[in-house]
Length: 209
Image (cartoon, rainbow, N blue to C red; front, side):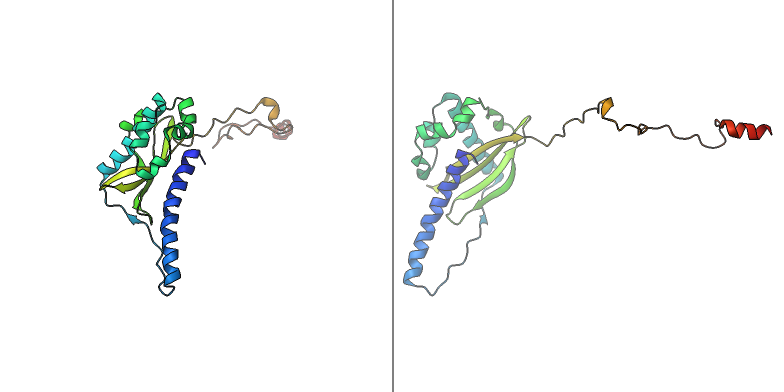
């Protein structure tokens, strides 16, 4: 698990822990009612809004990686995201910056969502997916917090993988690897019908008699 994913998870769970702690204190004063488990609900946001959030986040990250300045990326986030200093963000994404990862293609490629936008128990919108680019697939996971009637970045995780499974070519077996004493597997099919066949010497002598 990458450090960026750890940041995303820790921030989301921290916010969830605050909500859970408040519920625990309420239960201590009134133990009778038992709160029902929260099930994530679909977020009320259209696809255009989802594309804007995903692409603006990844392009801001791309610019930060290319310039080494993560101040803008930090300022675009929710207040909870501001707990990360620009220097801390530079440490988290140092590997991507070192490898010269280019995320600019996400501006025109179509993302595939594997987790549709949903509202978690802490009120944040959570989504995940990938850009099936070639040769590197860009995987992402994001969380957004509601701030002034807008969704602001709360956590982001970006990783990279192979675009699609590719089977390696099967090497030709060396001649010495074939079992000794056995004929090769590929053989010609026996002739069909009344085609002439070679007779054994013994059968030939019997035919003359």
